[in-house]
Amino acid sequence: MQSLNAMLQALGWAKELSEDGLERVKAGIVVRNVPAGAFVCMKGEPVDHWMGVVEGLVKMACNRRTGKTTTFTGVPAGGWFGEGSLLKNEPRKYDVIALRDSKVAFMNRGTFQWLLDHSIPFNRFLIVQLNERLGQFIGMMEHERMLDVDARLARCLAALFNPVLYPGISRELQISQEEIGFLAGVSRQRVNRSLRKLEDAGLLRIDYGSITIVDLAGLRCFGE
Image 1 (cartoon, rainbow, N blue to C red):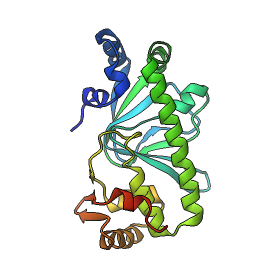
Image 2 (cartoon, helix red, strand yellow; image 1 turned 30 degrees about the vertical axis):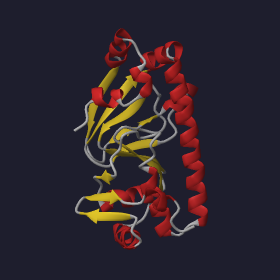
Image 3 (spheres, rainbow, N blue to C red; image 1 turned 90 degrees about the horizontal axis):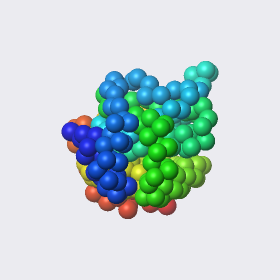
């Protein structure tokens, strides 16, 4: 079970702060429990916080009044999100929903701005984070247009093991097939078929309530 302290210790920029600076950052963060299915934040809301997943799994999605839903990506424990909207000071462009009971850290705008003004490592971190997220979304567009369901699901899983966006994540991911379906935008039954195919290819191992990645590089290029 990860704590906020452990999450911050995994971040290079946090290690570069002075003891007083780190305490200031911690004082500017509130950790909230978000039950499965609940909104972490909603499209159209004012953006007042930068957020990180301390425990659990959330998805970034867009839900239209017509009932159509598009999932952009999942964010597992260790991942931070929302810096783009905070930097642009615009209403949020997407919903974030907990796929399971989660603990989410909310860093207030004042603390985020203080880091921008006082920490070069934090600024470098943000540049890398934004660039990595941009590459992730460009890749998703390519995969959606050019790959079949099995390959898209493989990429969806591989994206959860991005070492830049989600540092320290274990190769064993506690995730249900229903949760994978929510992230990949396919039915649970279709997820099961795809996972079996990926397991037969030697890329992962399926266990009850979890998946262990055996060949991450192979998962990232499956179907090419």
